[in-house]
Structures are given as structure tokens and as C-alpha cells.
Amino acid sequence: MNIIIFGPPGAGKGTQSSFLVNKIKMFQLSTGDLLRAELKSGSELAKQLKEIMDAGKLVSDDIINELIEKKISDPQVKNNIIFDGFPRNLEQANALDGMLKKYDQKISAIINLKVDYSILVKRISGRISCSICKKPFNEFFDPPIEAKNCENNNCESRELIKRSDDNESTVSNRLKTYDEQTLPILDHYRSKGIVKDVDAMQSINDVTSQIEAIISDL
Image 1: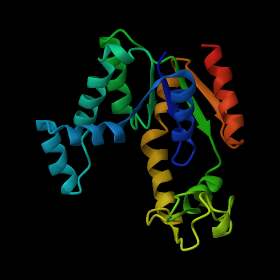
Image 2: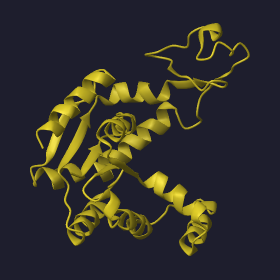
Image 3: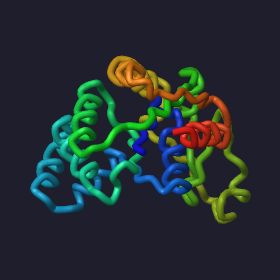
């Protein structure tokens, strides 16, 4: 089976994808991972990608689709892929449909992680981590513990690090882009009857349990 983990930024797609990778031994297909792997390959495409990214430009759908198809065509992962962060727009969704059909595959389910946007903003804008052991915290939901009780008990000189793009304004803009470009994909897949809604406001373990139940019925 092939599955798409779907949801807005901060919904927990990466966390739940990791569960599927570890427990069900699925292959996680992330465009970010594909781009990084290609950049290291030294191929002609890698040179092209480096020029694009060094110039601060967005990688085109054509290039993304080329990388996706290269992986879909690999018989070692056939019908055992979890798509994390792809597709991001209707054009990519239509391209994915075509690629899967070409290699005699299909999407079995869209796991739609439903979350409240106000909570998402706090989840992302509140993210901080220890500069030494990298333990993550959240200013709203999981405030930092004392340094002496950090991950490896050796973090007295730590700083609490916050990504520059983890701020309320940036998060709101990312959600707006998601609403305008990515959310319409759900209608595309609902018409196929394969969208499975999950209450992602629950604990990580509860969300995982919901996904396990869905997968067991596929």
C-alpha cells in the first residue's frame, strides 16, 4: 500500500511518518530528503539543483516530479511508500496519479491530520531546543526543564535555541499558503473515497493508534 500523510505545517506529519517507517517498515518519501540525496550524488541534476538553490529560487515541480518518479519506479519500494510533504498542490497531485498508474501502483489512503490552527501556531512558534543535547521543548506546552535535568545531565552551559522562522507571522503565512495551494488537494482525493480523517489534537500515541486502526482496515 502507498499512503499520503496530509496536514498543515506542525500537524505531526513527520512524527507519524516515522512511526510507519519504524513499525510497518514503509519507505518514507520526503521531497527534502530526495533533494539532499540528489545534491550529494554529483549528478548533472545535482549541479542544476545547486544553482537553483544557491540563487534562492524554488525548485520547479518538473524537477520534484523527476525525483519522485525515480523513487516510485524503484521495485524495492513498490507499493510500500509513505509520502510525507508531497503532493503540495493540485498539479503535483495529478502528476503523482499519472506516475503511480505508469508503474502499476495507487494511493491506498490519505491520512488527514486535522488540527486547530490556533494550536498549530503555538506548537510551531513555541519551539525551542537545548543547544547542547538538542532536546526539544515548547514554551507553551512543554516549557524547558532545569539545565541539570536536561537530556544528558551535562547541559549547564546550554542556550535555548529558537529557529528564526519559528515565529507567529511566518507560521501564519505558511498556513495561508497551505489553505490556498495544498488544502484543495483533499477534494481531489475525497472524490476517490480514500481520505481518512484523524483527530491530531490528541496525544502523539493516540494519533498513532488512530492511524494504526485505519491501516489495519486497508
